[in-house]
Image (cartoon, rainbow, N blue to C red):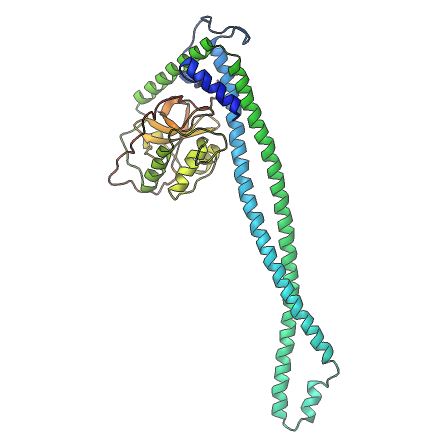
Length: 383
């Protein structure tokens, strides 16, 4: 995120009382007739129309961010594969060098011994046939060793050639991924610039009204969700789930940064993936992969440490804290915080450790001061 965008967002937050953070259309009440808040260059648009534009821009930015994250993870894996193949190729070339050295010595030995009489004639002329037979056995062993040397040379050459081809292919794949990552990085920056430009076009009054509009919508969505009974009684986390949650809680107050995985900043899936990594249970990097690959559970089964996925395209993720609250990195310009679970439109939930047994005793982590302050909303889904 550019420094200019961060300054813009922070200035808007101070001036308007809270940073603009679009909420899902389903969680925002009907604004009714325009009240005059939408003025100036935005074309006299209503609060709802401005919100719709921001929802679209934020959704585009989040999709681009998670695409970038996925490519970054693939590039990391590809680099590891290139390193592995390079190490194997170096070892194979060393083995080939040794085999060729042995083959050279064999060739010289054969040349030097080319004038000697055959072992059969030597047997016929020997005074001690048994001794000659023993020598013949030794000669046979040498012949087998020579054949083995030749086989090793051929095998080493084939292995080195195969590894060289694989290394070249892996390197080509790495270069392709690096180019793709650069394009996706530029796309994220463009999307964030679009958000910046729209925010810059809004007046202080518009920002303030949007903030009030969204906060009331988020509060209403949380109230309805909790009243629905979708969440069951309190459940205890597993040992790994508790460790992941405590890690996430320790990050509260650190800034959101797209593509970041800590330790100074995180994006939404960077926080959840690192928390579970530190708990000893590696999980996929992006929110889409977490939704696609981890076991899904009903919301009624949520326990602390489980992951809550948002928006139809699974472009946002948070970690369940308990009592209808989550820990999340909402979006650029915000900090990691505790939010109501329904602050964003829910898609479902997943459990990184489905086999983990609940703790017999559990005490929730103590939250730092100001843990619930700031914007609750992640990237928006267009209505």
